[in-house]
Length: 118
Image: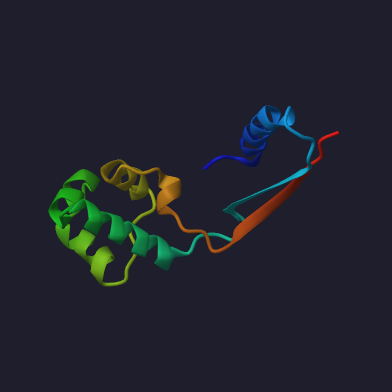
């Protein structure tokens, strides 16, 4: 995920290109996880399971990569227990996504920034 500063810089660069056309004020909005609120573990587990299903990965393959038994993988995928968070790094590599894309925050913080052109 991009941090707020890089998003503002990106928007400012876009505005510079439009600057020669006309002078307008812009409001830039974006959302980012509210890290202080924590993770929604059920939604995170659901997202991980959906990605595993979409990739067609089997419990045995995942277990070999994580160094655990296929029964342990089956247990956290189907019976409601949750996997060890350290395994998210390996899972993210197997699924081809970043760890941030696997995690689902409880709350999202919205940022609105007014950029005044003078």
